Length: 326
Image 1: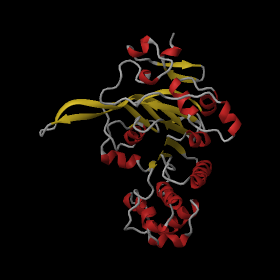
Image 2 (image 1 turned 180 degrees about the horizontal axis):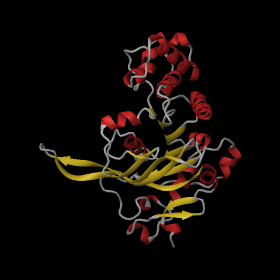
Image 3 (image 1 turned 180 degrees about the vertical axis):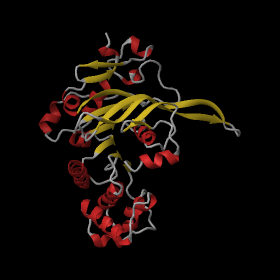
Image 4 (image 1 turned 45 degrees about the vertical axis):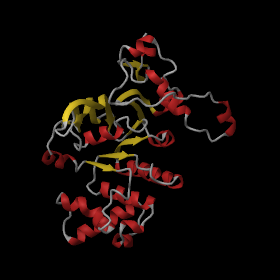
């Protein structure tokens, strides 16, 4: 891993319109992503974590150019790709691929696995002749731990873990530099999750890959990440390197998330202080004023309900919290 940034996201905002009536008149908007900024160094794994609906996947789709943005800037490999058209993003997507959450839903049930893995090569005109194409598919299947003869089977003939390996092989076909993993193991059995995570880590070391890893399972994030950003209602509330965030979390929301992860040792589990998050997640249609987390925060102060906090550097951590702005 070097210090060069392969991806930079600055003040990204994605708003979805709220419409009413037969004429679909816009009466408001939902700030799904509201001023998100981060960077990813080449060769590292940067994770976005948070509860469902916090804007993680929308952020990822925006990076890929699959979701239009309201404002902000996205820079990939030194190139400003903000607002690129589909034709312009076609070139970028040769270097930026995605592994989706549902391995079965993202595979065409009518195509054989070999054709699925080789599809990106055909789409981007990189298939070569028949022999080269077949050799590339064989190599990709071997790389993710699948047998060559499996290429003639259909997706329904594979287990969940095997299907995700097929998705990873497809993502590797164009030799990308950045792979966006959108909850790649959340649909798998716990016994299979570790195998897929270990495969991703092995591929990263062998091929020099960079990952934007999206998850809500903090135990998975702890295993694979170099740096972690915690999102809540469209904003990043804490960002730090993995060890700092897991050993000394600072934001009340981060502490509560980590407190919800069970300890394997029953004695340690019994000794832990309870860190419950009270209340329901507010609606993005009418988010709380000030700090969006203050309605559920046990450390909330009067200022939290009136004024939105700004990102502040606290040692090796970046925090968006009034507790650290006094």
